Image (cartoon, rainbow, N blue to C red; front, side, top):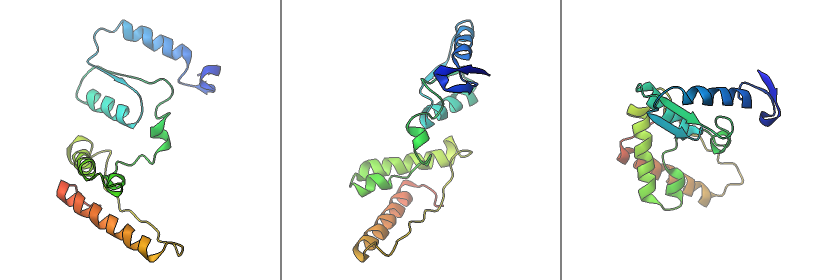
Length: 150
């Protein structure tokens, strides 16, 4: 490892390594898949392509999961946030995609987990009822999409 101010100090990801790997990439022949962005979606797409035997290159401006992937919970959600805003169609689509990830595309990476939302004393009865209704609607959405439960 070298000390590279561009990466903020000692890192295996540095300008020297980048230049070396780009030179090797240019000398290596054709690429089957080029993935731009090393967030959760890009890394997943690159993993899937490489696992299928495709010559895959992932390029990222910063470090893997540097942006929103790093700041998120890393959860593959089933569409509750869309459901909460009344976007039923995209909520269903999200639940279907989650089911595909769990069932066939990435069962080694994605699994259903139970969710617990603490209803603290300052949460009123109306809010508690709304939260419970949201989870019941989410369960109905999940069942309708054929997505397994936790």
